[in-house]
Structures are given as structure tokens and as C-alpha cells.
Length: 178
Length: 390
Image (cartoon, rainbow over all chains, first blue to last red; front, side, top):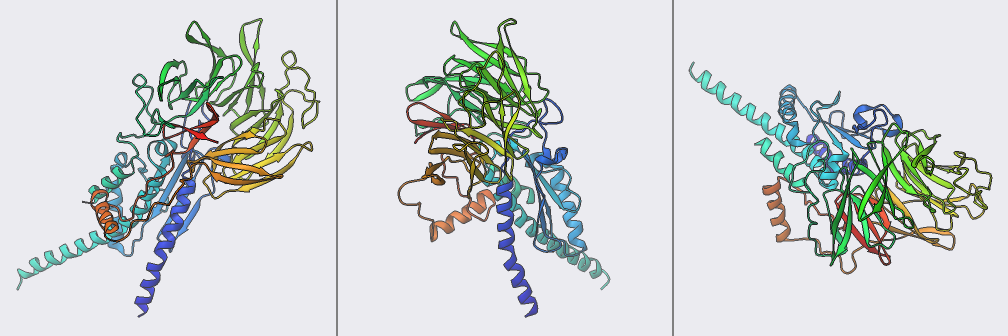
């Protein structure tokens, strides 16, 4: 019953967590085309440059627990969303690292994905005003929320497959010795 | 398997069919035809529109489709078609203003240049303006008498430009005293005072009196002693101020901030004035304009214009101009909803329903102008110009 109650509580925190992330992202995604104040004729994502403090918003962390959290850093023309993925044991740590590496190497296809995650998080997205001009903002937010839900499912599925494969390999190997 | 799922979701959130990555595409092909939309009040003219401006009799308007060109549109039947393309800027044109009396267009862009265009022999000819700024220009506005214009820039200054007859060019004087990029400027009807909105979260009022061009102002809310560049008033906000405007009499000032507020300042009793701050539930406004002394329109990231009215001294949120009249769309329920949900899962790899925006504009509104008839027009980052009846 203890495990039942704690899993109920865990399930109960998912919706408010995702709702909080959704409203933060909707507000942070109000970006505009902003030419650089530092270099003439340049247009850079201010959240990555970090030169002018007045153009950056205070970073917000929305945490479900110590591991699962989202860092939203916004600025006048760009937004960086970093997601910390739940990694319960060592196998999940390895699987997460490999999976994120697979995605990061194909970051161009995702347009909004950052090639390296921000320090302390598993994966990061960089959304600029060029993205909000060509994509629809509410759909970008939907994508990020969906991504957060799916990646946990993917990693659990991968872990099950790893365990299943390990069992089959062990059985067929040790079967030789019977 | 995993990659497939994600590519499905990537396809789902793309607004158009074309892929886009990184910086937006340049000029490209000659002005393509407008995309057909059923409603004649909605003109879908490009992928993205940065700004637009109407001429004096509202028969033509100029707009920038988020590249280096400025396109002049004229009415053809029920639609608006491209008449001319003005291509002089090197980087995206951020602002256009069309002088009603003198029929001159002034444009400014992120290439830190501004050009004044005059219509001669059926063609628009540009004249370079010596702005002397070393960063992008963000906004340009003709003064009410059209003998000067102001250019806001990322160099944290505003250039006030006037024509010098001796050398036959436009020269500028700078107003500094800003701590960050100036995002918007608004001229007081008296042709001397200028309100500026900046990303340092303040709205300021300056004097732009130039000896030889202006006559000494007789009466303004800030007095009559107004040397050039003197700061007359500062109004604070909690977020970046995106836009400001004066009422037609010049006795009221309004500005909008990124903290989803709109601030009205009543200067009928002199400076600094009584202010009212309204906090709205919408996403932040990008532009605000006074319609007359008691009505103002603001529009921005929520993709619809909002009307504010002054009821006996108190400003209040009146209505959303894009509200749908009639019964609300019935929420899907039962077997249809379940079918739609599974179909979404298969085709787009998504669980939740992805609702479409039911506003006329599908992306942030970046410009509000007075259009033909009793209409105001808004242009947005979705490439549409929409006519609203007020």
C-alpha cells in the first residue's frame, strides 16, 4: 500500500508539473526580432550570448522532484529550455546518455534542438524568433510537453528490451552447460 | 522507431509546408501572388510581415515581407496586389512610415541605414539619410508636420533627422540617455515632444526642438522651455516597453510593457501626470495606438487586437476585436473524439488534441495602422494584413 500511495502521488504530480511547464513556456515564447546591441548588422540569440543583462529574463526551474526538472531561460529574442530526465538506475543513465546523443547528432532535423545540453540537464532546446516566425508557438509548446512525456516512456521501453535481451542471451549461453 | 515518432511530431508543428532552419530566407523570387483566403478582410501576402504603412488616401500601403524589400500594394478588385518593389536595404527593413502630406516614404532597417523615398515620374527614388548610428534601426516615424523624422535604434539613441537645404541631404541629431535599445517612438502632435519606449523598461519623453526647423512651442504638458534632447519625463514599467503613443490632443500618453500591462498617463493636469496601469490576462502587447481621446487599441503576442475605453476617467478593457459571435464551437465528445485521438496518435504521434488558433492572425501582431474607411489594419508575423472595423 505504501508503494501504491507513493505511485498515486507520483501520478498526481504529473499534470500540475506539465501544466506549470506549459504556462511558463507559453509566456517565455513571446519573442521578437532583435538586432544585436554588441555587434552591428548581427542578429544573435541573446540567451546564448548573455552579454546584456537587461535583455535576459530570470531563469525559472520547474521541478517535479530532484531529478525531473525543466529550466526555462528566456530573453528578448530567444528561449532555452533544458530538461532533466528521470534516471532511476545506472542502466537508465547509460540509456539516456546514448539516446540523447543519438538525438543531438541529428539536431538539424529538429530545428529547435541544441547540440549540447546545458550543464546539469539531459537535453536542451534553443528556440529563436526565427523559429516562432515559421512555426506556431502553441504547437512548439505542445511538442515540448509531448517530448517530455515520450522520452520517459522511450527510456523505460529501452530498459525493458535490454533486460529481455540479457535474459535470452544468458539462458542460451548457460543452456550450453546443462 | 524512436526517430520516426519524433519526426512525426516535427511535421505536426510546422505552420507551413516548407522547412525552415536558422535565419529566415532572403528576398528570393519576385513578389509571389497572395494566398487566397475566403474573407476579403484577411490578406495573406507573405510568410512573415515585419511592418506596414498606409498612404494619405489609404489607397496604397507599403510593407516589408521580412526581407530587404519594401513592397507597395494597391487594390485590384477585392485583393491587394504588388505595384512596386523598393529594394535598397542590405538587411531586413524594420519600419516604414508614409508621410500623408508630403507623400514621402521613410524606411529603416537592421543595416543601420534609413532612406527617404520620393515619388518622381512614377518611380520611388531613395535618398540616403546620414543617421550616424552604429547599430540597427528599429523604428522610424515622421513628425506631424513631416519636416523631421525620428529613428529609434539599437545604439541606445534616437536620431532626429531634418533636411538641410545647403547640402541637399538629411542630417541627424542624437538623443541619448537610454540604457538599452529603443523599441518605439511616438511624436506629440505639437511636433516637438517625442515619447520613446525602450528595452530598459522605461518610457521617456524628450524634446526634439531644433532651431531653424521648429518654432518655439506655445503650450505642452511639460512647459515651454524645451532644449533639444532634454528629458522631460520618465515612466517606469516592470517589463521591456514595446510601444508608446500619444492621444490626438497630446494630453494622454500610453505605453505597453512585456509584463502584460498597459499604462495610461493623463497629462491634462500637467506633468508628470496621473497614471493607470491595467494588467491583462493576455500575452504581452507589442503595439498600441490611440483611436481617439477615449479609445485605444493594443495588439501583440496573443494574436488579436484588444480595445480599451475610457469610461469617465477610468480606462478599462472593453473587448477583444477578434471575438467570435454566436454559439461557441461544441467540444468534441464520444466516439468522434476517441477516433480523432487515436488518429492523432497514428499520424502525428501525439496524445493530446492539438487545437488550432481560432483567431484571424496565427502569429504575433507587430503593427497597427489606420486603414481605409473606418478600419484599422494589423500585420503580423503570419504574413497576413487584417482589416478590423472599429
